[in-house]
Length: 298
Image (cartoon, rainbow, N blue to C red; front, side, top):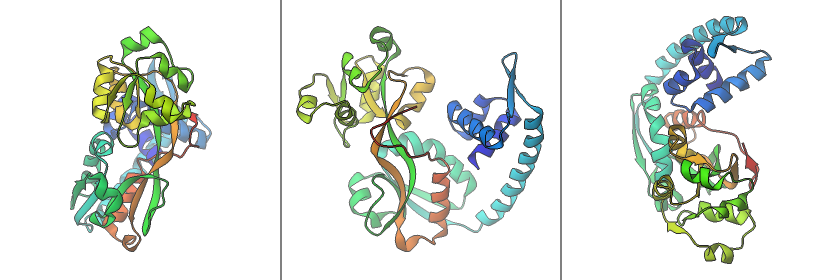
């Protein structure tokens, strides 16, 4: 479904950039969705003529049909949405809320204006008092007592630094190459930098002995990296905006997949709750695919 929405928007604007702005996605994500759709159809939908995006004949014919179908679907869906109302308490970690959920939340409010959303971000409550919220996003192996979980997206870590630092030290080819840079340690959470360095072959004792700036929260780590104080490792979702603006760059062209992933969770007894179901499906429409842990991925 998301692929069709990306195609419809790109066909309407003849621009992946404007489609990404309309759908609140990155341009690369829109491009991937359209490529995926073209592969499934076995034909090209767009072509570039003098650096301008243009629909192929197949794309033009398909766009007319897709637009009509999506319009009818939206009308029918809107009739059903009006019946779903009430308050929904959502539990999500602060970093994920700030950088991933909030930029997308207005889309849910547009779709379900009668649902009032409350977000709690207390980590202790999220993982130990799961009766304190209706639906949540947890990071782990997907197994929590009495909770139903659905895979949302992988935890992919990226090595990031300022453009000037990248020019000085060059690309990171293998995970251990991050030590060629001044290093910024992230000390909370479990630590993303410790995970990266462990996968690079360092022991806990070796990691503890490494020099470098040590900061607790992702916001501080990102600010320090933007100031050119060093290279660090953070979740990809946390720095999409900085990458798009060019104030940070990926020192390594690939991301490192973690053993833990993000899951949409709710209590087993609430699986028929319409508010929970529509929010869960909305979240899952923004998700990604799983990757083997410890593997570098594009």
